[in-house]
Image 1: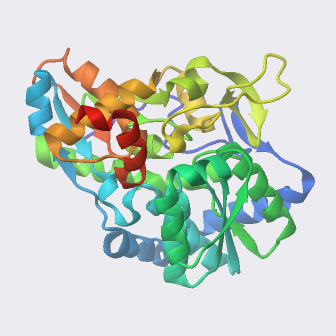
Image 2: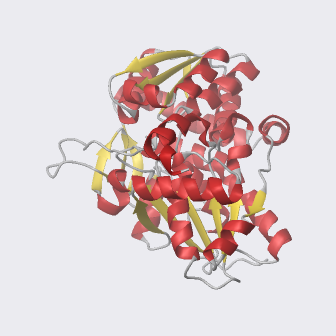
Image 3: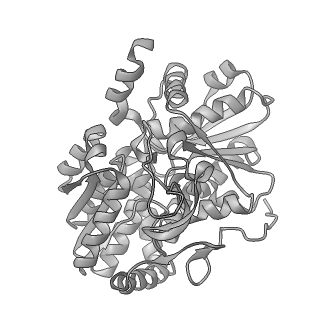
Length: 395
């Protein structure tokens, strides 16, 4: 199917300085510039190496279980009485989320670079466990850093990572504090590789993670053309750091008829409620104090989207009007989880349920031939205690 080009599309990546419009960049101290430049060169060389990419594709298929299925939510669609809802089922990947795609790519890149240790941050623990699994496969030790608040909420993922051989360092706070800690460790350990978990931080990390997750959208394009004979009308995904949603929409950015909606957590909504600032290596929208002297605490029932900022690509896409963004409350998120479990037999993670809340409300108002695709980017095993505590009496 021919593509109609949209000016300033993101499919080609940032400019030479790592900017997407005015967003992105490399706002770091001098000690981090050499490893970032080394990483940029290694990444550019790797994606030109057919042998490396063929090996990545092989492991995506045989280790990750890619492509993840495209599933018609028939009972939900009929219950809501409107649009046809389809799920890109990333929760069925090995380790239970989209995170394993990025982890696999970066672990392979680290091995190619000769790195001896992997450093990783995480909020929901999904990136930590996925990185630990991939590193175990390739025989590289892992040290994970998580905020003490998050560790208590997602202990299952922490236990999995431990079983894969990873070590965990706890730091006070949540995801933003874990990122600060892991960057300090990376500065002091030149033989280590920092495996960034989302399309955030200093360039080239946003580009690297976007590349790894772009395979979600490439799979989806092929799947929906085969299944429906046309492209979707609307793509919806949760937007925390933003890697899963960016992967979902990447292949459709040059398709003006395909609408896109990113959904943040109501009390962590950098694009909805934030302002432009610079923090942790990048320029992007973020929740910050009025004088720009620091960031505000983000809150969400879903640890993976409890983040004060978002990837610079999303800030750029918002600024040019290509993608719309909104937010869901914790209550809306829990209600969406309940509806999904009851009508489709799927226990999704709370993160994608924030996007499902908007999927359901929009679907009700659309005709039956309207196609909505939403990414189920994680499974909900780690959230069951929280869900039972909050709404267990409603089942």
